[in-house]
Length: 526
Image 1 (tube, rainbow, N blue to C red):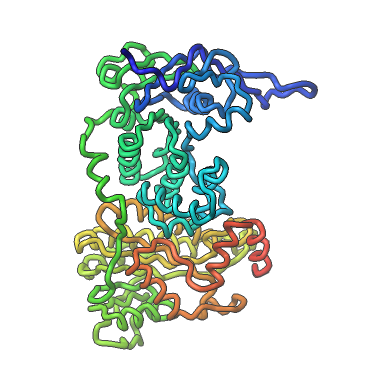
Image 2 (cartoon, one colour):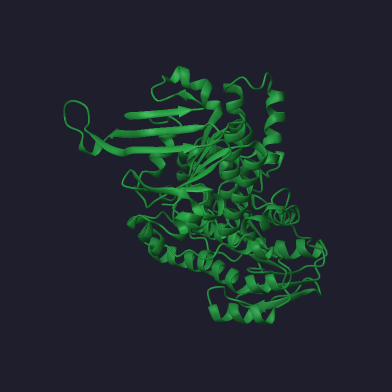
């Protein structure tokens, strides 16, 4: 006897208002989105929904969990007709079917800490009588998705894309649902993070008996994860069946075109599985003692402080990079001066070849004009800042990434600024270059994770140096910033905000980003 369907849709149709054609009077005209969709999903089954952009995949997923009300047809969940149920009767059922959204950044409240976000469904559905009980469940859920309880104290913006997606998964499984709809949840992640999230979903499906509706444009991912697949075109299901049959011998012309248009490599059966064992508790760290470091901008300010902090922690050798070594006196026999202009690609390549024993790279060289974007000299200043702060850092990472990989992974420290986190139009050229470098740092972090290289973004507020003396107090001491960065390397922290000002701004950005922008705008030079 066949197992009863957990989810069953018959003749499902959806029409939504088209506000782009709204008339001056009366309701907006509607546009048909879904056209007679039929599907069934058994308990523990996995169905992939594929199709090009605009095919109706996401609209179908939202309709199946009643975020949209169907225009026609029937929708049954666990034998109960939920097609037209009002919200007050749907609410208790929502604990049994959940959705994970494509963009966790927009679906997680930026003003709430992760622990509060995950605890919210527990409180709404009466699953935790006290705050302590809720936190205990939250910690268990975070560990279940390969995060640590300390992640519960962070805000969404302080997490990587993969970590934010894990928070979304933890929130979705908090109420022990029977069905989860996952909408393009790995599309914005690097390949390594994709594999880890897919491994996690497979594990949760097995352990919790979840039925999974997996929406994706990536046919390789669907073929790897799903038992069955439905192909959608213009709001219609043109073909569905088991994955092996559909991918081997597609019957509909659109399915054949879709498969031909997107090359499908042979499935590596270990691709997802081989990263699963790395998920829980793996943190890239590095012991600074006995390391071989290269510090750019090492003859002044924070760079000078980095050199001394490295020596104090027992570094075996420190290459002190600077544009000119004339007049430089090394503070210790372990310090080797290196002439290095990070904007000169040939010089960077030469340094990478000559300093082949480097295990820790500190990208500290920077230019700070900090001019309003509308200033007369803005374009010239912006070019200078981008050349050093962005392209210089990029070239250093590009040339020294293979060096670090050959030496066991090591670490990269990129010196940025808390201004990298403030919206660009309000601050000026320096902020723009640092914001671009923050995005670069995140990309380098994803690329080099596979070789075991830790990449740390250091975002202090104003520092007590010649470049920072134009800023209002309080100013952070260079030694404090350098030591905080090296602490992060040894602890495996990826983004840090040294000092009370930077930490306060980081929290302020989570709570009131526009207010922070206005405060910073007051300090823009004329």
